[in-house]
Image 1 (tube, helix red, strand yellow):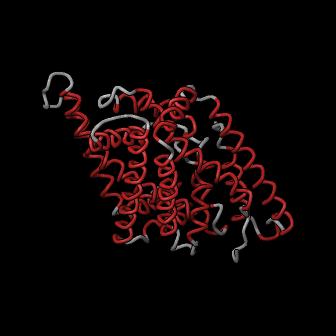
Image 2: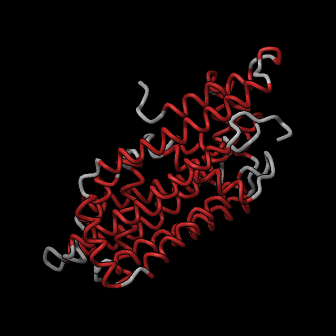
Image 3: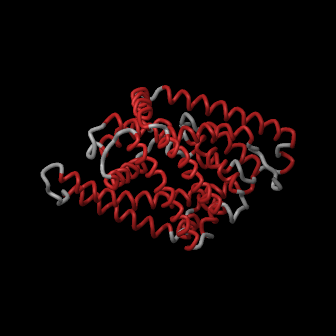
Length: 357
């Protein structure tokens, strides 16, 4: 079944496969490439902008949150909001640096182009389940021969970010189960259910870390399964990364996690939600952990994100309007704004490249 919103990615994959695997006599000529580059780039920009606009209009919590944001920010000034917007560029800039390092074994990508690839990936991801369209958006900026291999490299970057999310989420979850019990009678001893969930998360975290530093296991798995052998050549790049490079990716992922967590805390403060900052940080860790494991479509996740945030942050503050407004604001700043920027950048992207591009 074709998921609504995944059409640009499907179109791209079909053209990419044609370019990579057909004989030269059947490949697209130069004039056809030029036409398709402009037509597809423009079509993607228009389609994505319209899709983002339609999805924003249908967010149920948006009007109330927007009203609260305007009222509160007008009282406290726009400085904190401006800081959060600037931090958005740092957030995605760190992701661009990660991706730049990941594709380095394939080709040298200037940081400016890497940053554009990240924004385009965000734009293509907003209407796809669990943001899988992100991969298609990024590889548009690479040479044709490297596009499919870069998908495997990008997955390694997502893997590193997931590890950091799990680690911080575990720390936050330990605080949460204590807080949860405390609010129901002052007993800090977690219930059996919480103990089992914590043990399960610890096992998952350990296994994920082992696999991350033993990526060759994945390549070996592809070699042993007959129907996967055909695509083994496209995932061999993941075995090239040294432990030092993998640790560097984890560091960049941790820095990025700190940035977007700080953005959330600043917005909560700016919108009148009061609590001890480190308690808020722990609860935000749990929110990001929950959002990482639940299947969602990025542009439609604001309702779920709002519910999850209200549940966990509601233990620290009764300012439901402020919590909801901060949740909507971080969604607009870190997802919708970059997605709009990325859709505009797609106008200038060459979907078909020669190897000398």
